[in-house]
Amino acid sequence: MQDGAPKTGPMTQPPALVSGLMLSAAVGLVAFGLGDLEVRLFGRAWIEPLVLAILLGVLIRLVWTPGPRFQPGIKFAAKSVLEVAVALLGATVSAQALASAGLPLLAGVVVFVAVALGVGYGIGKALGLPDRMAILIAAGNAICGNSAIAAVAPVIRAEGRDVAAAIAFTAVMGVIVVLLLPPLGMALGMSQPSYGVLAGLTVYAVPQVLAAAAPMGPVALQVGALIKLARVLMLGPVCFVLGLLAPRLEGVAGEAPSRRPGLRHMVPWFIAVFLILLAVRSFGWIDENLAASIGEGVKVLTVLAMAALGLGVDPQGLVRAGPRVAAASVLTVLVLIVLAFGPALLLVGA
Image 1 (tube, rainbow, N blue to C red):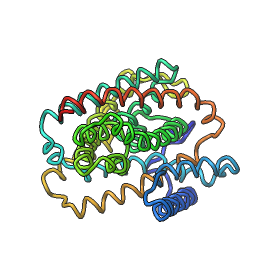
Image 2 (image 1 turned 90 degrees about the horizontal axis):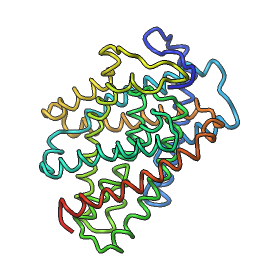
Image 3 (image 1 turned 90 degrees about the vertical axis):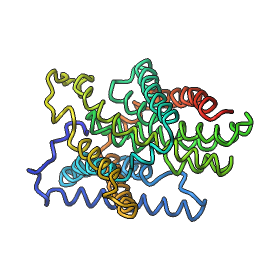
Image 4 (image 1 turned 45 degrees about the vertical axis):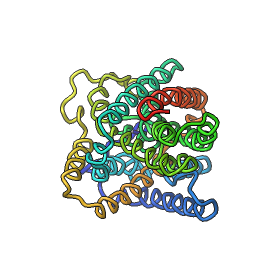
């Protein structure tokens, strides 16, 4: 995922990883601390630790570039740790919860995510973004923001600088949507169920959905959370499909795309584990308490990986990518909100 990053795996010696892992962990701890401070001061974390971690990493890179002894651990955290986090994410979701929403609502969410992915990708390509960056922006907007970007990145073998840019701009848009959506719903006189569908389809993270839906009432809150869960569960199938398409995308750093990918590249190991754990969770072999504990572990691993991504980013490259990525993020969010009004009015009634 990093430019010129060496492969990490079983041959990587643990002592060589320690310095970089400890540095990434330290940045992650600071991000968690700042998130907790936000909650104490404002009642909620407007900028999640995941975003704070990558921003802190980039800020550190502005004043200091980690030396060679840090690089193996940083690259290991940005790739392998992130893949483990994505795999474990499957244990936190259940097919039963999605089925409880009913087939019409489920079908609407599936169609919406598919259309949003296509539209977001098209906007990115129209603005001149490479395939992988366009997919990251589209996935972040269509599914679940930063978590989707973090999950999709290793599947399509995105570069660290692209992941950092996508997460940075998606985070900003996520906060803006949370602030502007409730006044919009009130101005349009939307019912609680309709607004809940709108919030569930457009807001990124689950806590942000709750923050955006709560001002409209308890029904909006419940519907928004349910719709959001349906979107999150689309992450597995989307990653699976992208894993099949990844070899056909534009090569990284001029590398020619593979023509005959093997099964290991078509279905990355962490997506296979994700789907297996989802099935195990759905059969009830992972209870609520264990799922919650695994979810906390996923959060820690993801923040660690995001800190490493930030530490591995070239800030100048991020600035160069800024205008087009920002434009793609803004346009995609606007289109997403417009598209969401259809399901919001048709599925539950205005």
